Image (cartoon, rainbow, N blue to C red; front, top):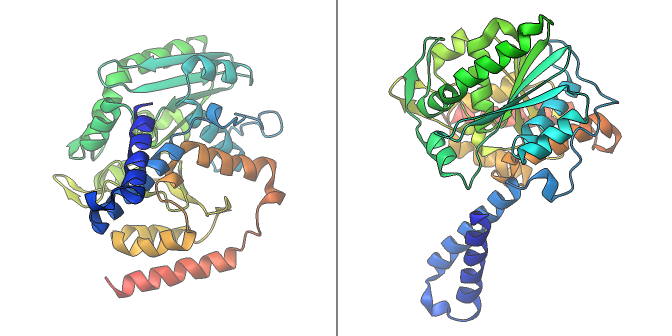
Length: 352
């Protein structure tokens, strides 16, 4: 991976600057180099594939099957998080894993123009559309992420133009694949999911197919559209935020079509992996204040990297732990959590 070469070069630079020729850099310059290395290291951790750390995908497939319901279920969250992580793996490997866990077929959709990737897995009762997120060594993905102006859509409101173009690049193929699967007239329930850029594409795809979608589960999703998009959005959606994942805070600020807003119900994973079902309206209010500098308090409270939090495999590990080994989690102290969020909220609102 190009990123790793860059990371190792940066580490060598820091070693040289600290151990041999401190005169080459001022203390301030050395500090910046160390920050760059720390950020690259966090990115490297966040981008690790499950196969690189011996993560066992869908380990819970027999003990916690998917529940065909539009309401939130932890089992479904674990399934869709693992499938979202699998989207980053080699597609032949992803196909092998999904078919060995009960699905009838695996179909990949890819755009050479934008680099957008997704896949569909299905059996007689269910169909799942999974979008791959940003690959940090993909120039095309990074270009899509960077195009943060909004464009009006025929599906309601305005959305991130980069995400919109990426989804359009696979839409004809995707629509054809779904129509072909449905020719057998079996009434399969459709779920849509994805992580990061994949979460944004999943959100827009769900909005387009609205009445055909049972539910959408997203992980580490950036904001997708404006207020009009939020108001038009009707699909039951569960949006997971891992600890202080910084990607869920962008894009921010005003654009040519208005302020970006999130959709769906937030599900917050704390620093040790607990999923908190309450106080979420307070988190939404805290996040909606737009006081990005204030969220430093949130990050310091977790004592973890806001970049590493975004790693797709970290979402999968936390949710699998909730499904398979709930007894291993520390006490889910909802009262402490409520009080902590309330304190942050009051501090932020008092300094608006």
